[in-house]
Image 1 (spheres, rainbow over the protein chains, first blue to last red):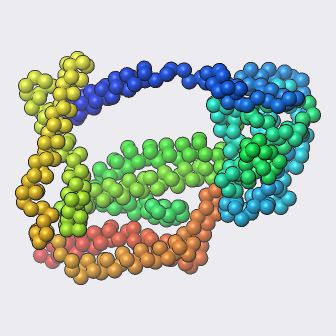
Image 2 (image 1 turned 135 degrees about the vertical axis):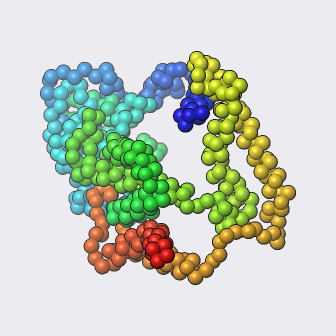
Image 3 (image 1 turned 30 degrees about the horizontal axis):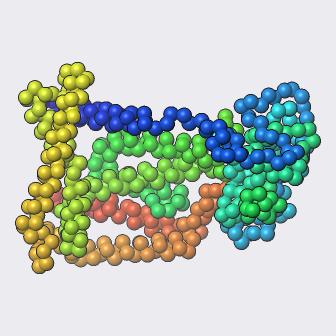
Length: 208
Length: 272
């Protein structure tokens, strides 16, 4: 018996075990439902991405995959503020205190140019990259939108369990993600950090 | 491997590698190059791909998320931890034989130490038995390395079945055998070749001293190192350096002890 022989046997045994495991997994996979796309009208009154009805007079979400971006250039105002942290410095992660500006503005209101059809997220991403501001996001297929995890290295949960980034357009906190909000000419977009699930920045929709 | 300070990490990794090479020679080098190095590189690449925290933005990934210096450095540090833990455990495997383990814990926790030593012996025994079974099967014409894929798979499954049966039966036999010899009964003595003498006492004192000194340094913040959002930590100063030196001495203790014994042995031989 050569030295190589047992090793080939081992490989064959492993192969057999693998085949067995794969066939078992295959059986299970067939039983599971195959469609991963959320079924329309999954819950009463909600859209396929679990959004409640939009209030009167507010724009409906535009799915980023359907948005038509044209060459028409418009402008909007964008600002990023973490002023609420200044009142909750005791809750802030001690490693991050140096990141909070004294006046709370990470980005003072600036005028940003965008093309028709672009979303709040597109503009935020571009403005942050242009101004060398750190920003991390992750895509959430369930809500069909990007989720802003942190701006300027200030992340969700860095200032208590109810903290994170929210956005408002023309003083309204949309009840859908920022990739689905199609901007109009002259919109005023504010990204604000909340330490209390929106209550401290004037949004009571999540806590009522 | 408990401290995230880059100097401590390097000390731990280098000492672990030194000891592994001392114990295993070329095998340790091969393991390091074929298993550890790719894994370290992978870990260092994966962290910046999924973690974008950090103040120093180097460039932007295609997704639009930033690639930061801090996440790369943290990935390297995590990879360093991973490599040193694995290397230390390979050293542990070479040093701690099951009779040492049973000697240490046999009287305190007889059942658990038996189970542990049986578990640790399981893989090498399983492999040895697999060789025996595969040779026997090959002799009766059910070779798992020749024939069509289906035939090989079928023979392989037979072998796995034989092995599982054997290991279950063997576990019961071992347990019965230990029980019939009175393992774990009060008052039962066990032969062991180890004594606790002055050398061990000195080594223990040394280990306790190092442990206390480093623990004190750690709780005083001398080994603190921050990776996010900017890299920050203490590198200079008499105390932080002394902690690192003691840590280096602690990590190199086994290599130094073995080296001294080797040198003594050679000197005695040359006297003859």
